[in-house]
Image (cartoon, rainbow, N blue to C red; front, top):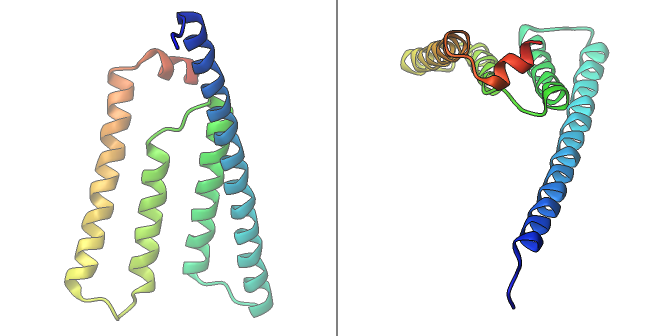
Length: 141
């Protein structure tokens, strides 16, 4: 069976339409799951009448995930920086949760990983400012 260029283009268009729909469904599921997890964490804090730094860092992780979903809905793309921010907060939370049980080398490795992620964010931002693309310029407007 031979396919014409028009039929191939139509198949691609349909595929991208279904792929975009699947992305939207996935993002909605992630957002709902994040809201549920956030609500559960707030309920736990309220019932225990106690808030710890690790609870707050976990809430920041949830907020970063929601910001990432919101950014995708707003701009249609996801900046690489958002997952890096989430990774930094997650590592900071790990560093704080391992209070006393982690070895010095483990703590140093986590701190080094946070530093490398921060340098990565700095490098990405520098590249976006120094060498902006058309997509970067559209997002700023």
